[in-house]
Amino acid sequence: MKSRILAAPMLGALFLGLLAASASADPVAHGDLLLSDGYVRAMPPNAPVAGGYVTIANKGSQEDRLVAARSTRAGELQIHEMTRKGDVMKMRELPDGLPVPAGGSVELKPGGYHLMFMQVPTPFAEGDTVETTLVFEKAGEIALPFEVRAMNATPAADQGHTSDHSGH
Image 1 (cartoon, rainbow, N blue to C red):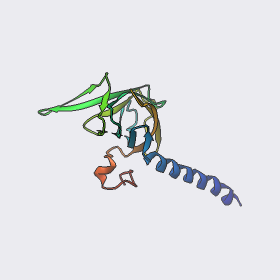
Image 2 (cartoon, rainbow, N blue to C red):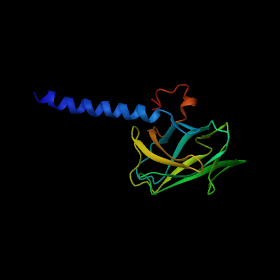
Image 3 (cartoon, one colour):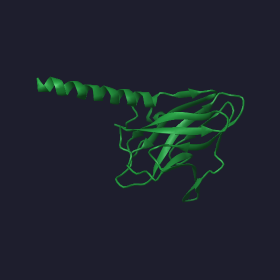
Image 4 (cartoon, rainbow, N blue to C red):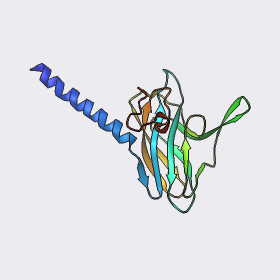
């Protein structure tokens, strides 16, 4: 009898976990913007920072701008750019935000534009979800769950599929 009683909550937790994982992979539409493939990489123990990535498409006729982001899982969230000059990679904050061109898109991905989750008190673990709010100049605030993928995860488009983002 005990095994049946324990099995029901465990199955329920498993179902909720699968539901949360699939929900975080779904694109989020808000006005003219479509946000897709939001994820962060899992963090090693005691790491205080993590990169966040997402593709932002603007179907409208006016440019918008990602001006801020926040998450209860980080003390600070910044919009960053990485550039290469010769053999040197440089990362810098974009204090004026990141433009999203009218009728175009911008991809935040490893080695380029990204969100920097800073002052993270508890490292992100693969399989978790990090609730994040992106703030746009025109579209306003958009809540977007970011999946936590493997430490070496790449965008879903680079993986050749969109249904399994875990890197397994």
